Length: 527
Image 1 (tube, one colour):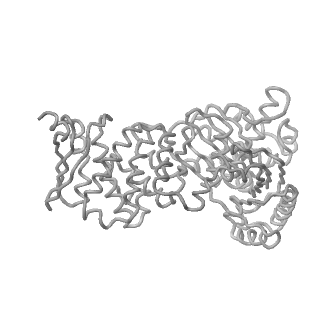
Image 2 (cartoon, rainbow, N blue to C red; image 1 turned 135 degrees about the horizontal axis):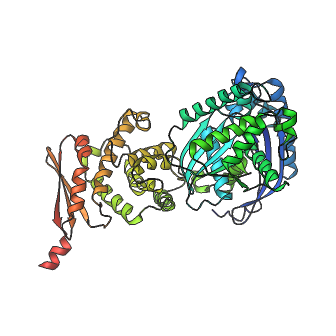
Image 3 (cartoon, rainbow, N blue to C red; image 1 turned 180 degrees about the vertical axis):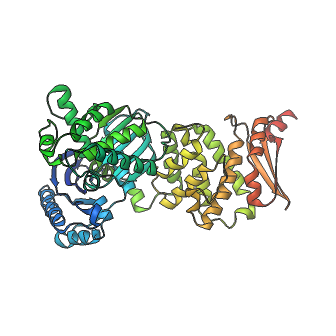
């Protein structure tokens, strides 16, 4: 979105309160909606120190962090920044006294600290990565390693499929599982198994192979710098620097065998990270192995840049809640286009689904007001999963839609759209499915009804030829008769719609018959 004239030249600042370090970035919005960096500041505060063992933020660490925030607020004030966004991640999110930290920042500096979720961290890392690293539609994983947690985003081009947040951080793992430096083989084996078990528990079998990994956070920055020194004998800018998992494993084995003083002497490794680097690099190595990574690319922007991008591209109508139904569907269509869906097919399915829904009568009368729009959006988006997989595209559709940026759609509405699209084929909705089971009984009924309608509508364009002109529905109390109109017998469409009508019949509690009549315009011209 291009900013208005009043927004051009507007200055923004973000303070990212992490478990290991706190960072400030000050930027100015350009006319094209991008921004230029005016200033940056970083403090290693180790706010998350001791958290994994004690469950509390250490008072001394809290004071270090608050002092850093005060300094950064003063720097931002020097640039006459009207808006300062402060976000806190894993340490404040998990600590029992995290609320005390938030309150202290409010009392001392008048700042509101926004404690974000792991999923939000992943989204911000993704925004930054896709701005800086061209993916050209390739499957990728975006990984942000902090002091207390690691966020993993699986994406296809500019579309998110899954976001995982894992309690694997460089500081956390060092405190719990790296007892000494050098690290003995038995302790390394224990650390490796701990990381692998957490990856298996959170991610399991990856839904697809992401050969490229885009990494952000201090671990990745130091990795890129060390690899560059090894290859070229010099340092310098490492943004976008590319290296391999084999190089990561080689460095990991070397780092394991050194004490902290020896590690600090490695060219490219920051001395204040020497104590936690083994844990951080181990996370990278094990993730790369699990995900089938072939190449790693550094993105130095990370979460704080993602927050800036969110601030500079946010749609003002969406913020004000003024998006109308037509505009909401425009955003849905735009997203479907990004996913390279077959637009003509999806529009045809949407038209048929809405026609069927509108003629269902009492069967849909108890559904909430937004049901029709949820069906419309799900029909337009039901094919987005093809971006990742053909055979499992309905499952991928659910994940892609839940992570989609759809201005004007609430989180609840987006979840309903995703569920309806998820069940447009294959298995019926079941409470044992996590995505369906966590819905309320009323929402589960809505998904059953709308996915039943969508299944039939999708079958009515099985050949993607838009052969059917429209349909009519009659209900004699025992059987619902659906008659489609076409200028020729749509044999494949009739077969597929009938095949997919079982759920529709269950929802209505009666039989379903689907027949054909010749289009009136064809019959009239023949006479």
